[in-house]
Structures are given as C-alpha cells and as structure tokens.
Amino acid sequence: MSLRTTSVAVLVIAPLIGLVRGSTPLGEFRQGFSYPGLAAITEQDIRRDLFDLAGDEMRGREAGTLDELRAAAWLAEQARQAGLEPAGDDGTYYQFWPLRRLRVSSASTIRLDGEQIALWTEATIFSPVDAWVDEPLTFVGEATGEALDAFDLQGRAVAAVLTPPSRLPAPGASLWGWRYTNSAVRQRARALTQRGATAVVIVSDSIADAEFDRVTPWRIRGNYGRGWEDTRRYQTNQAPVIWVRRSLLSRVTDGQRLTARVSSESFEYPSANVIAKVPGTDPALTNEYILFSAHHDHDGIRAPVDGDSIYNGADDNASASVALLAIGRAFAQAPGRRSALFVWHGAEERGLHGSRWHVANPVVPKESIVAVLNADMIGRNHPDTASLLGSQPPNRNSSDLVEMALAANADLSHFVIDSIWDRPTHPEGFYSRSDHAPYARAGIPALFFTSVLHPDYHTPRDVPSDIDLAKLTRITRWMYGAGWRAATVATRPRLDPNVRTEQ
Image: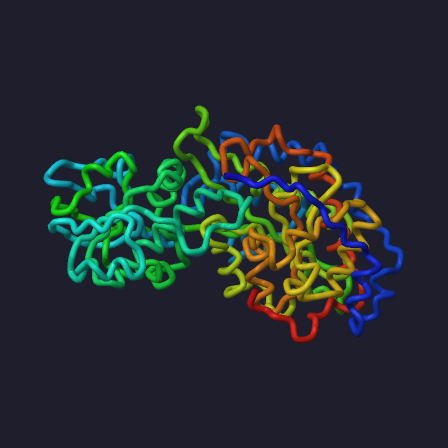
C-alpha cells in the first residue's frame, strides 16, 4: 500500500514568526540577502547526476553491498570534481564503519509430519534465532487474550491463525499491508511465547497472505546494526516464529509434528559515509559548520514487480544526493563565512545507521555543527508544494533556523509549505524517519526538506524518468538558500528553550 498526499495546509511566514518571540534578532534573518552561488545550481547538472546515480547500473545501491560502495565512490569523485575538499577519515572523502548483519540461514529447514515446507516461498522465519524443534503442534486457531488460557502452551510448539494487531496502522498510511503484517505477526507471536510456547507457527489471514511476497524479502535480509552488540538487540527470544501462507492452513492441525532446524548467521560489511567540505572565509567563523545531509543507499535488487527487480531509488534518495552535489558546487564557487560540510550517509534504509554513526563519531567537533539541513525525497508530487519538517512544535528545535529556511523560500523557491506531515498526529511519523533525526536528538538545530511520499515509494517504479526535475532544482536552490543564510549571519541559530531533543 502507498500514500498519496491529498491535502495541503499552508504555513504563512508572518504567523510562524509570531511564535518565536524571544529568539535571536529576527531582523538579521529577514534582511535582504544575495545568493552568489545560485547560478551554479542548474537543472542540466542535476539531471545528469540523477540519471547516473539512480540508473540501473547502480543496481539500487543496497546497504552492505558492493553496489552501495560503488555509489559512495561515485559521489566522492563527483564531490572532488565539484571542488569540494575531502573531510572524511585520513584525508579521504570516506568515513567507513562496520555494518553488522544478522539473518536466518537459508540452510534452515521446516517440516510438517515429515514433509518439507519451502523456506521463503511457503514459509518465512520471522527473526534470526538458533533452535531445534521436534514437537507435535498445539493448534489454538484464532483464540486470543483470555481464550488462550484454555490451552496448555508451556513448553509446546503452538500453531495459530493470524489475527489483527490491537493497534491497526493508520488509515491511508504508506505500505499499510506491510505494516499490518509485521505488527500482527509480532504481536501474535509475543502473546504465545509469553505463555511458554517454545516455537510458533502463524498462518496468514487474508491481508497478510497478500503481503507475503512483499514482507519476505525484508525477513530474508535480516537485521542490521552498527557492530555486533547493536545487532544482537534484535534477538529478543530464542523461540522460532514461522509465518506460513494461508494455503497451508489445512496442514497445520492439532498433533501434527513440527520438525524445524533454524540457524542464524552474521556478517560484517563496510558501509560508508561520504564527507566533503568547503572551508568558510571568515577566520572567526570558519571552524563552524553548516551540515548538508542526504543518504545514498536504497533497496537494491529484489523479487521482480511487473518484471522489474531493480529498486532504483531515484527519489529515495538519489534526488537529495545529487542536490547536495549541486549545493556543493554553489559553495565551492562562492564560499560562505562559515564552512559547509556535506555528508552523504550510508545505510539509512537499514535504520539511519550512517547518520547515527557520524553523530557518535563526528569528523568535526559536534559543538561546531551550527545547523543540519537534511533532504530526503525531494522530486515528486505537486510541483508547487513541499514540506519543511521540524518547522512546528513538537518537532521544531530551532525557530531561528526555521526562519532562515522560510525566508529563503520567500526569496528563491516560493513553495506552498505543506505542514500536515510535520504534525505529531500525522500517521506516518515522518519527522523521525530520516537522517536529521540523530542530529536533532544530539541537540543540533535541524530541518528536513522533503516532497513526501508517493505511490512509487519503495517500489521498482521509483525511477529517474519520473522525477520532476524543475521541482527538484527549486528545492535544491531553497535548501542552498537556507544554508547560505545560516553560513552568513553573524549569530548562529539557537536551540529553542525547553526543546524536546528525543523525538
């Protein structure tokens, strides 16, 4: 399932300014600005870079693969050609870090009364565990809650039919069925293991059955973390949870013998943040940084959808990655008073791992990062609307930075700002799902530029030819203008008082 934006709420600059009484002198942020590097941001350059980075040759740039490293190397070379200096480790453009993967071994086997069940096509093992099961099944059907008290589940292999989760995904939420299935399977398994089940077989309901081929590739890939200890947190119990298609319901009966040998395996891969900079011109401010952020990974190659198996990720997030290159050219041509730091994070799709790594291991002192301007998915939907997440409470952590961004929009891009996605009541919870979030949690002023989700989100249909290049160029110029203001003003943007840094 996917989500289409159907309504727009407008943030008018004057009322928003009225909400930030007591901040730094707003006149400094409102005053007229010139943007000397603007001409360096061209639609022609953005188009060329987009079709290179999101083309089939990049194979979807999946984190933890050579394809992600190929994309990182391509970005580093483009940054070099743009005149950006290396700012990674040891004088390079790279900050490498260990991405640990924990997955179910495909050598695992499942049998019902001796007959093998095909792993990943008929059945999916939901979490990486190591277990050997040889027990008759206790079948509880659709029983939930107190009805389960009628069964003795302690030390038994238990089979159940999937039931809806207690909290359904919000109506209209993206990937609704995917969310429903993951939530329902986890909740059903937890209820049974808490009653002592040592193995769980869950038969799909009709909703989950339709999502089997979408959810299974995620379960095959397993879980990712920044090192072994971070990854082990996913192994919350040792009871194998086996999720099967609806067609197996007649075979999952009381007393039928489950024989399962389940094993996990772990690998450590290199992932990389690509980091470059343009030094500032003011000796008093050059050691302060405006950080421009994007992620360069996507979903790689998966089961075909309508014959296409490459998840190109043109909007998510090649669009913002090439925007940062264009902004880098603008700063290289006309540097600001403060330095500009460009970070293309790795492994965002696996859990914001690249940005979390850089926040914990910054290449510059954390207190020297004045502001973070992050972009993710900035090339689709209505040509004249965009979202600025972190511009209203409770997500706003710097009214000063918001004012700079709105002033740049008024000067350069003239978007109608869709504020709905920034509200805590929005079903997507989109603010916390991109790379600015770890910086905001670390107490750094941060904003998130986006044109929000669309029906091709996380599908092979997110391709370069469907990007609105004119809109992508406008958002790039807006982001540059906001960053230029932050790099130029004498007073660095301040955190709002009593801001909630744990979003």
